[in-house]
Structures are given as structure tokens and as C-alpha cells.
Image (cartoon, rainbow, N blue to C red):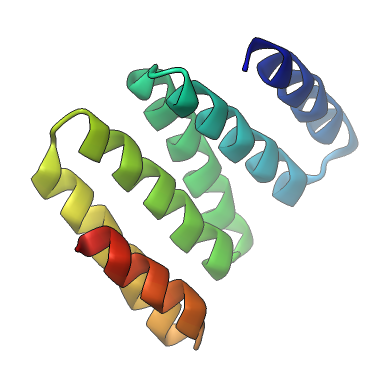
Length: 112
């Protein structure tokens, strides 16, 4: 995971340099996933939150829903179940609004 983090960090820097906001959000999400895998849930939350904010700014609804799932997973791992449920529910609402049936099923699975 350390190697993945180093590579995602390089990707993030490039995306910021070239002004690719969607790519920046993706790199932040990937970093969040790597820190989650390491068990560093607070860092994962910080990174997924940054990713979420960018996705909202650029109107990436599918990406927004995915960031909410990443946040929910981290809060779930911290034992903050009510927070996780709230995030999963937000993700579910977005998936339904955009007609993403597979994503809807995934969000329901997370809620379960």
C-alpha cells in the first residue's frame, strides 16, 4: 500500500498541475482507499471528504455517490454506524436519482 500511496500522490500532484479537477478527485479517492486498506481510517476520511467536495463542485453525481460510500466504509470501520448509515443513504438516493441500478444495489448492500 505504501507504493500505491506514493504513486497516487504523484498522480494527484500532476492532476492538480494540469487543472484536472475530476482526476484530482479520483486520485484523492484512490489515496483514501489505500489508507483505508492500511487501517488509517481518519486519513481515509479526510481524503474521501476532499474528493467528495470536488465531485460536488464539478457536478459528478456518480463520483459523489462513490465518495459517500468510501466515507461510509471508513466510519463503519471506526464503529460510527449511524454516520455510516447516513452516508450510505445519501449514496443510495443519488444512485436512484441517476438511474444507476447496480450502484443502487451496492448502496443497499452497504446499508445491510
